Every structure is written in structure tokens, then in C-alpha cells.
Length: 180
Image (cartoon, rainbow, N blue to C red; front, top):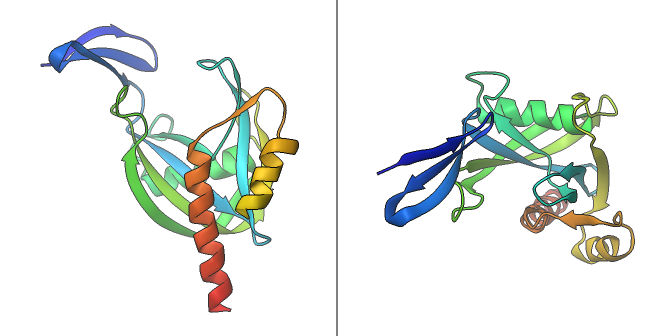
């Protein structure tokens, strides 16, 4: 049994089994997350203000699927979001996984891609409503920890998905280094 309790422009609050409440997206099919790796072994992160937490958040580039470009594939959405948010295009894309983001609150599912062979084609972001700062951070987990402590902007919260992205990025860099 599902019952709509409230609906807004972007989200719908639902009452489901056992009086559980959850939210659903009204305007998108899925979400994409991008683990973008530069040729000099940096992971590309974005920082923007997030109203639900009242703070800047540093996170993987990401976006909604089908919110603007109806019927698009998740790969096409990932390519568009990387370009729009960071100014990068990628020569190589690899699907990593599909999974839930916050299963206790939402039915939202994300497809995760790794993008390599990056080329900067503009400074980004394209959408002027998004105030995004792009960060390129060394993938090495020890350098990342040092950046996290010493260099990250004050009053910014790190999205925990960065750590999964960092793990995948380390794997891709190691695999590339071993093949050369």
C-alpha cells in the first residue's frame, strides 16, 4: 500500500507499509554519479551549497537522469553532467555499479560511472543557477586525508560517497599503471 502524503515540484512524500514514510523524485528517473580521474591522478570533485544541510558540500559530480533531457540514458546523463558541472569531457567511460543512495528514506537509485581520459573544454559550470567550485584532489588516500584536513574550504561537509569514489579511482590508477 502506498499513499501520497504531499507533493512538491521535485519530491513526493509517501506513506508506505507499516506507516513508513519515504520520498520519491517527481521529475527524474534515476541519478548518476561520476568518478572522474585526470591523467595526473586526481579525482574531480564539486562543491556547492546544499540547502538540506545548510552548508557547502564537497561531492562527486552527479545529476538527475531525465529531468531536462527526457528519455536519455544514464551514460548520456553522466556525460552531460560532467561537462556541465566541471567543464570536462572524457574519452573513456566505464559503468561501475547501480545502487541505492539512502534506502531508509528514498527509493532513489544511482548509476555510477568512471570517466577517464579527461579533457578540459570549459571552466564550468554551465547552469548559472548552480554555484559550483571544481576541486581536483590527489587520489592517493594519504594525500586526500591531508587535503581533507588542511586544504578543504572551511564550513564544507564531505559527502561520504567520495570515499567509495576514491577507492574506485585508486583501483583504476593502479590498473593503468600496471598495464604500462
